[in-house]
Amino acid sequence: MAGVWVLAETEERMFELLGLGKELSKQLGCKLFALAWGQQDDGRRYIEHGADEVMLMDPPGSDQPLIAYVPVIAEEARNHDPDVILVAATARGKELAARLASALGTGLVSECTSFRLREDGKTFDMERMVFGGAAVQTVTCVTRPQMATIPPRCFSKALPESGRQGEIRVLPAPPSCPVRVVDKKPRAQQAGNIEEARVVICVGRGLEKEEDLKLVRDLAEVVGGEIACTRPLAEELKWLPEETYVGLSGKKVKPDLYVGVGVSGQVQHTTGIRDAKIICAINKDENAPIFSMADLGIVGDLYQVLPELTKQLREAIKR
Ligand SMILES: Cc1cc2nc3c(=O)[nH]c(=O)nc-3n(C[C@H](O)[C@H](O)[C@H](O)COP(=O)(O)OP(=O)(O)OC[C@H]3O[C@@H](n4cnc5c(N)ncnc54)[C@H](O)[C@@H]3O)c2cc1C
Image (cartoon, rainbow, N blue to C red; front, side, top):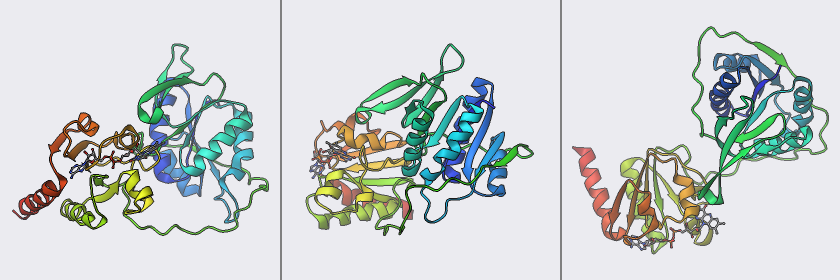
C-alpha cells in the first residue's frame, strides 16, 4: 500500500496534514493514510476529512513518551513502503520524525513549506526557509520514503465530506521504551496566545520604560489584540513573558493585523510575521527596515502616536 502517510498528534494538525496530503496523493495517484493516536471516532473523522485509511494507535500512557511508537510505525512503513511520510512539526513530532527517518534509513526535510512534483512524477522538490527566513532552500529527498515535517498552520485544513468510506486499522501496542516520563505539569500561562490571535500589537526596544507598556496595553484593549514583543524585551529586559516574543527563535504569528511599535524589523524578528495579513509599523526612523515589509507605516514618535491612535480608534468604535 504505497501512498502518502500523514502523522499528527492533534486533530487540528491532522486536518492540516490531510489538506496537504490530499493534494500530494492526487498528484501521485495514490491513497492517503492517516496515522493517529485515538479511538474509532477519531478515525472516522479523519476519513471524513480525506483519509482513505486510518492506522490508529492507542494514546500513550502517562509514563510513555511519543517516541515509544517509532518501532511500531517503522515496522508498518517497512511492510507497506509508503511514498511519502509527513509529520506535523510539533516539538514531539519533530523528535519522532527524526527518529523514524533514522530507523528507516531515509532523508527528512524539516519544516517544509511547499511541494512541487518533479518530472519523474514520483519525487517532490520541497521548499524550506533557511538563514532565519532570509532565503528559501529547495531540497529533494533521494531516498524512500520521502519524509518531511510540516510547520503548524502552514497549510489549510481539509474540509469534511460526508459519506466518505475508509478502513480503520489498529496498530499493535509499542514495545517498552527505554525512556519513561516521570512527571508532567502544565507551564503557567502568563500571557494570551499570540499564535492564534487575530490582532497582534508587538512592542520593541523603542519603548523606554516598562511602565510605558500601558500605552501598548491600551491600544491592544481597544482593538481586541494580544500583546507581543521582540526578543530583547522578553529575554534581556524581562518586561514580558518569553512566550510572547516573535521571530526566528520565538513564536510565529499569523494575525489579520500585526502592529509593530518601536520595532526595527531585523530579519530574526520579521521571520515570525511573514504570514501576517496586514503589517503596520510605527517607528520614528523612516529608514527602519520594518517599513520595507509594512503595508501601512507611521513615521513618528510612539509616545505621541500611540495615545492619539488609541483615542481616535476608541472614538471611531463608539460611533
Ligand atoms: C540567533 C538570533 C536569534 C534571534 N531571534 C530573535 C527572535 O526570534 N525575535 C526577535 O525579535 N529578535 C531576535 N533576535 C534579535 C534581533 O536580531 C534584533 O536584535 C531584535 O529583533 C531587535 O529588537 P527591536 O526591534 O525591539 O530593537 P531595535 O533593533 O533596537 O529597534 C528599536 C526600534 O525602535 C525605534 N524607536 C526608538 N524610539 C522610538 C520611539 N520613541 N518611537 C518610535 N520608534 C522608536 C528605533 O528607530 C528602532 O528602529 C535574534 C538574534 C539572533 C542573533
